[in-house]
Figure 1 (cartoon, helix red, strand yellow):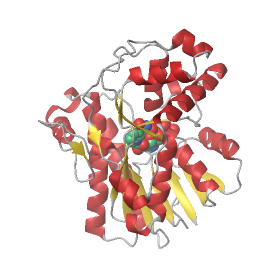
Figure 2 (cartoon, rainbow, N blue to C red):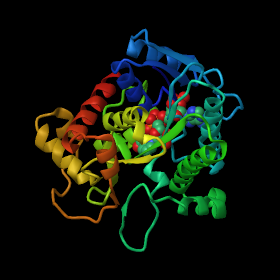
Figure 3 (cartoon, helix red, strand yellow):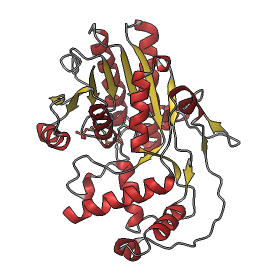
Figure 4 (cartoon, rainbow, N blue to C red):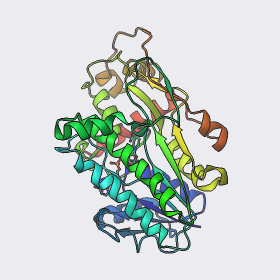
Length: 335
Ligand code: NDP
């Protein structure tokens, strides 16, 4: 089959495209600039990959050409950064981009399933007592925050609202328009793992990889605080492909979180010192921290649905940490 992947130049999308090609799919990627498309053509070096340019996913008819003859779609394109001067800078492309894509799919008679990359940002909310979040939870809090506070809302609420609103808009579209295709959503936690997209300088790092890079460069201050929940990019790509291929995945959202779940940077430091004690960069840059196994209260996210319905498996934390570290060291050599 032929699969359209939007935002093909992104960290997650490059891994998705690679896995789709490996599985024998023909892939068309959308990119915002030809230079990014050309980089991908070289990277994949596979006649089954091609790209089209969609400069602005908010423009009406943005995806009309792109969806032609596709059986499946992965919609990953969405801004992920924490420097917006107004929530609309994130919300507009997230929501309108998703709706434009769904409208284009609705106008085609070939698309059978659309997989939208959502996030735990569309799930997690502050709660009075700790809960284990699952697919039944929705982040209404960030939507209220940006509604009430506009540009005074926190950067994290702006991003989270964009993801929650985009996913809600997608499900509402399905309820109201009854298209021929069905929808599945994937809701990952913070994604680590080796980045393969074009990264010409540290300023180009995607947001989640930049978090890891900040850590190995000593910019992360609090090592023992809960740092969030993480999942490996290779596993998230796999979830997308399973969600595209497995019949029962239609109409479902899948929280995509590693078995490890919540982590601290202290644990990352300990893994790097234990696994790569002689590595120059580890000796020079990776802080030792306190090496205390202080137990911290982590937010909980269930991955049970992905495991049961999709038979999803997850990369061990140690491997994700070491592989991400090696990939960043390789990139640094070229900067
Ligand atoms: P990247 O920043 O690497 O990828 C984002 C992709 O979206 C790029 O292809 C980018 O294009 C495109 N994009 C960004 N802004 C716009 C816009 N205004 N209009 C059209 N396209 C745009 O990040 P990730 O790969 O991490 O993100 C991919 C998806 O995964 C996003 O939907 C994100 O919300 C989601 N996600 C990511 C997590 C993470 O920790 N990384 C966690 C949970 C969800 P260009 O290359 O031209 O900038």
